[in-house]
Image (cartoon, rainbow over all chains, first blue to last red; front, top):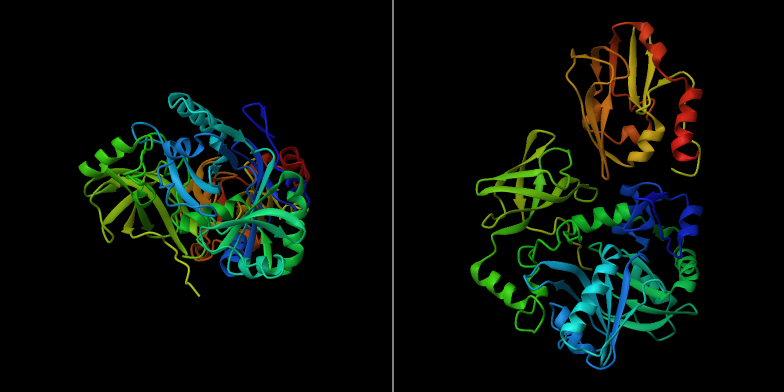
Length: 368
Length: 135
């Protein structure tokens, strides 16, 4: 299989996916499992028990050496000073005009060092953006692309933390939410992060590519029936219910984080690229806003479908039938000023389907 | 499920676009194949046509949506839609669970029974699936 003739990359877990009978599809230059059996079953397993995802296609860019923190802060919209060692922060990489280069998580791995976890589709563009910014700042910081050497697994769902706790060295506890720690699971050295992309509690686990297979086996064996391999299909329905943005859908270089409703990840008083433009955007008020929509009926609003509202037209960026919320849900941009309860219509194959603007997320986990 | 061969019953005929047709007296029933439902994954919505509509061979008469994709339903032969499986509105998952049984979509009164001769046999369809999926 290939896309545009370019050969597809494989993650270190590729043969496990094949053995498990996964349906593999091209995604961001990788041959990735979209599902093993049923997207909805995998989705529900994550909400009820735990799902194990291979997300090794994602990129890891380390910034270290002299001036590393200054370079990282120039790249990253969130506040680095407020992220001491062991903290993870979500934020954006922005252009001068505020357009989004990527959305990333930043790991403060050392006093003067950070690790960015970036979208697979943006690894090359991010690396280039890092180097452009480095040159502009006359920085001597070192930028290391560790993507190929790094495996990344996500274990998500209510059973995830109890399972991880069992595998940690005696006396160690899993990190708190939005924290991470270097540790071991079984005898495998990992970087264990209390983060995820599903709306459930869980962890993301960085591991040397050469040990990713052993970690996958360890988690599956230790989890038994409670841990279900889950593919990109379920990852997408889960993140859509949780209204988490996906780069290339809700975010791109033509949209800024304010329009996307991500103000809380933008520290406007910090010296990052795009800050002046975003301050102006906040002051003037954004022209359009990312909205959540719940549609009548079961037809699915696909990206690009037109939205009609009383304030003007918009466009769908993501849509699915949410297996947990049991409704047809969508995210999309529409003129700013619409509030939860407003009526709108999505045009699906030429037919206007009524929908309602709702507060997001569509799904919120009950905290136990 | 991707780890076994697709179910392709011998008592049906097939289209290149993955619909099946089964003769049932003077009418034919139409649905989508096991391969089609497996490719689509979990089906969440079926847009059904009106009863009584005349359709031409190859004409889109409905839509099947899954969480990941949308696909037109194409008429295997010309005829009049004599029955519509309205239960699918509430239970689109029947297309996944039982594509050749409870997952039937419409019944057609063919314009001409001989038009069925233009469809693929089970053996031909199996080769058509294999060429695309490798199994």
